[in-house]
Length: 425
Image 1: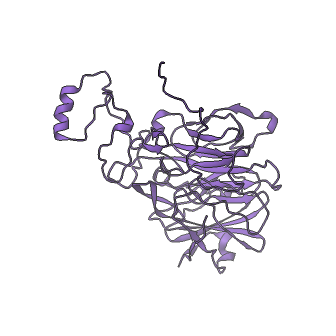
Image 2: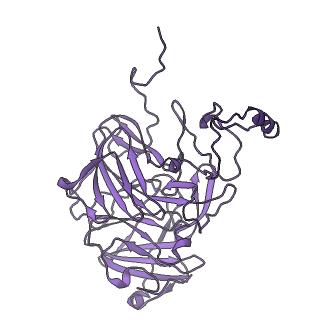
Image 3: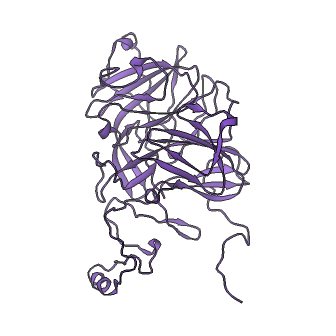
């Protein structure tokens, strides 16, 4: 939980654009910033319309202030350092100390004022992806507004009109800014907090980076060959679990701002697709799945009942997307006799292990270059979990308290319920 927040004011930020002149003398809302990498407890609304908040996976929600009946937020576009997973950090661009930026949570009917300060070295803007709003607030630089220059603060004003799961991201030098991590979640809750009620509501963005081992800054010209596939700019084993009490109704919202689609798969349970970019699907029209494909620029919300205790895998089903820092030009040596050449290489590189020579990925513990991650290798209760990237665990427990989001540790399976080695009598 965000028990302590760093507050600081943006000094000398320029007010710009005609609609904001009347607010030029008003003090800006405080800038709330954090570099925390763990999932923060849902932000309970201190004022305004009531709603049931979301838990942003490895993220947090942005506080606001109420001013004359208007909900005011302050976003700061700025360089950030994001830990992708323990052992690797990346120089990214984001908002308020993080990439992705903080989740913005509002309620249908809220009147909104969002201050956006640019601390980048180039111009930017923010597009409110999926929102109904006046054309001049849509955030496409050059088309609907002048770009926000470094040092300037622009103000966006509109009313939240439609409940659903949305995003925000730049429409200025997109290939650079989005490749550097500039994005965030937007949740508009229904007016009635009992409508579409669930017990736990998780949200995150799918994003990807191309960062060479030993370097810290993503390549911004990559189109397809990304080597780090992430949930909210975290790669497993740096992604937190999503926890639930046995019998609870769970919602997971995911938005895709990568360059490809992602078939997201949940083990041990079937779910219904409950929402898309266009809003909530009427209950009678929802359909069951165990895998749902999320296209580029799309959102999906799934819902399921946590019916079976255990540690259930949740991941993208593209196999290369559950690996970290993977090279794409490696020949397949399975079936090739490597014994002689392996001995020669081992004399020069003591940690060398030949692929396909009886060694699983969990056995390959060669030294890594600086600031990168092994392809796979989160430690599980029964050995190495041969997954990385877009992978985490849904942890369901009968004794978990309602509202408790802490990691309960690994599941202790009842005796006789674990797959076992066959030994003939």
